[in-house]
Image (tube, rainbow, N blue to C red; front, side, top):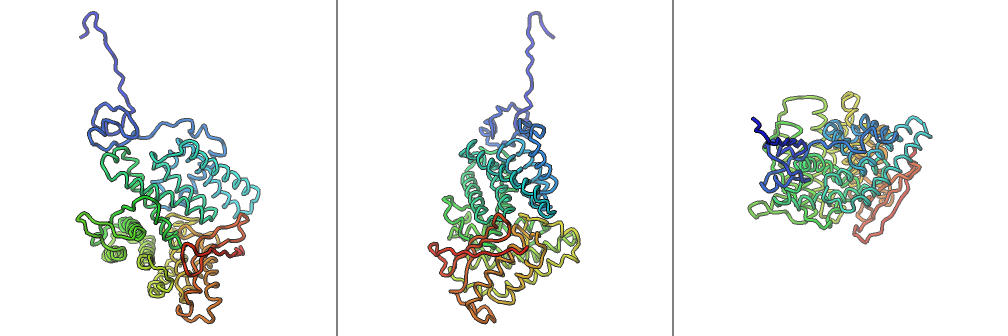
Length: 497
């Protein structure tokens, strides 16, 4: 009951606090990215939910940007991330694109470049050129926005890492290996810096739970898969060796068997990241007891044993495809893990059986007429998901057995001109592998087996980039001996499409 002269003060309840404080029903000070109440009580701040749309809202975009976002949503994102990851990535990218100017520009650029490829298939040259010009315009705006608006965006690692992935998307559409490596190296440098920094509890509190989950569960697996694909398709094994940040990823815990194929796939991503991290570091990291962890190939074999021991409840064409693909990558990964630190190309001759098995698995995977439409939808353009082109390129370029390497080349050259199995177009990769084979065998005389290609005739691909006319490839390579001082040679490959 009010007494005479009393004053009633109405306090408006704040609805903009962090999710952790809301669930605890306490007042939030709304400090970002993590509120001080959560930090002081040693809780993980769950973030602030969906941010309200600002001036970058869909209705405030230019017509070209709205069109690009619609195209990105309906076509591009599904063909990049694959059917497994698209539902997780799409809402995050669209929401971030509405809030962050660089992300808005790069989404517009990627979608426009993708559309130009589709228009090219329909022989609409004028519209194709317009889409390409729009793509380049927004790509330049995206890079400029990163430099001008926030020269040091390390305090927002989720945004910068997402930009790195989208920049790689753009360069992969242009088939620019060298530029992709630059963005991939930048992404891993930031990822390792972030992981190293957040090993202490106090530093971890600087990031909200959504940021932690996004980096750990979505960004990291994509970067891991890209690292594997680049290492198979070009001599980029040591690209992350001296990035100035400790490579601090532990060996994953492998179960005796898997109850789901997705779990096995996730563990394979972690195993491969451990393989590269420990190999680049040169020394095996210690476990909690102060003793060295298991070597890369030993961890791979544990994972393979767990996969072989698994019985999955569901059975489908796609599951059979995925199991074959994982087995294919296992055989190739064993080769990479065990030759990583060798400077000799002759060491690959010890793995002919692994190469042969990989080709047999690849041939069984590519019998699409009997697999049905679900596999045709698996990767129509290019995908961050695993595909057969990168491992087949490794077989064709590093296995000197003439029969085996030609089977791998044929798998790439005989597919549709615009089909991708992974991040590289099949015919594009097949032509590069074929040229490597021609160069190596040209001065070797009659080649009956791998022993007929001496080491001084062997080469390593450094990069390959399509020219603006899209009619030829400039491939760069090194000839033995393979040192950082070795000259880089180049050859021109006509596309013939």
